[in-house]
Image (cartoon, rainbow, N blue to C red; front, side, top):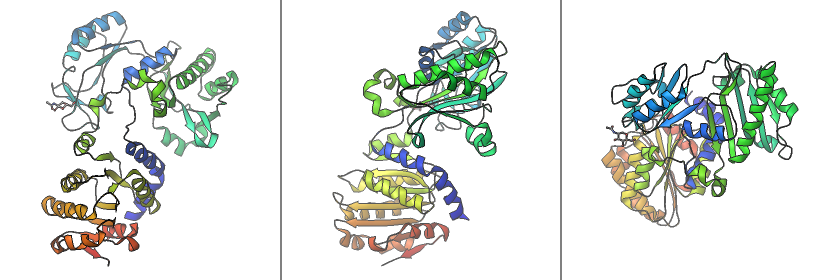
Length: 435
Ligand SMILES: *[C@@H]1O[C@H](CO)[C@@H](O)[C@H](O)[C@H]1NC(C)=O
């Protein structure tokens, strides 16, 4: 059953995992914009969003709320992590999103948000410091639809995807009612044609004058897609208000980082302070770390071997929990710190070490692992594949103590296969030795 579970996960996520790993190993992280930054970009392309202001202090927030002169106001803490609505501030305030009709209340609430840490399901335990809030006009939504423009390999270019079933997880809609998903392939020379935009608007369920409005929004979203070199612009929901307006209520924009050189203004908005603490810790030891959502921790050297390891795990129905790439000039201490990082992740049920000692000396790795096993009292099975320089001496530097005391499986390269690793996990083997 365990294997089945991996298999399912592997199939659904394989591709994404591979590109995530490739991306991280090139030393990059995805550019992720704050909500107000995305909305600003949308506004600049004429996309209809709620009127809003951004504030860094409570008095600015109060002023903004007055200036909005709206029937109802929504105040939102700006952090990248999701789950803001149900988050808690260390000022005691509950909820990173508040609705009110009174500008004075906006000032009071902002006072308990700005400069305080907001903890949500997606942030570290100590939360993330809120430096900015968004003060926006709250609008009622009578109907929610889903609309996205994304790069699609099978169409060799951008494609529009829409569904009248918005406001929820689109993957669920695609699975339960595929007939409610509509696609239009965009010709990159022609752009979005008027008949395509109108047909999509109609498929989304916009009728009468709203159809024209929605079609115009669709065209403007495509303008934005081109202008910022996006790989995906996802609007969920693209909604309808009781006043008969089509509004983009929330959007996620992904950017092509190959275009960074000509999108300097966009990439300058990147807020590094909210990056993953494990990545930061790894960087301190000159290690590259990428967190994924499987259960097999991977310790590798070099981007190519990492990609190959990822593919092999995927092929055998496994799912990596993370990747740690050891650089070139490795020290024992780094190996130890790497294990500390890998085992700190509670999702990890086994560790796979796949090291090719070219520049790296296998003896250093072996000694580092031995030290880590002893001092960290490794609880999960460990599979090690070492090949390359000094590989014949590593077995002697590897103390018998480690092998017998910890759940460990050492596989010489010629016999090495991921199945060993899976066997280790499934059978809870305390020791498997292949020689
Ligand atoms: C608040 O969050 C920041 C990260 O944004 C963190 O460094 C800091 O330790 C946190 N402060 C408290 C009091 O938890």
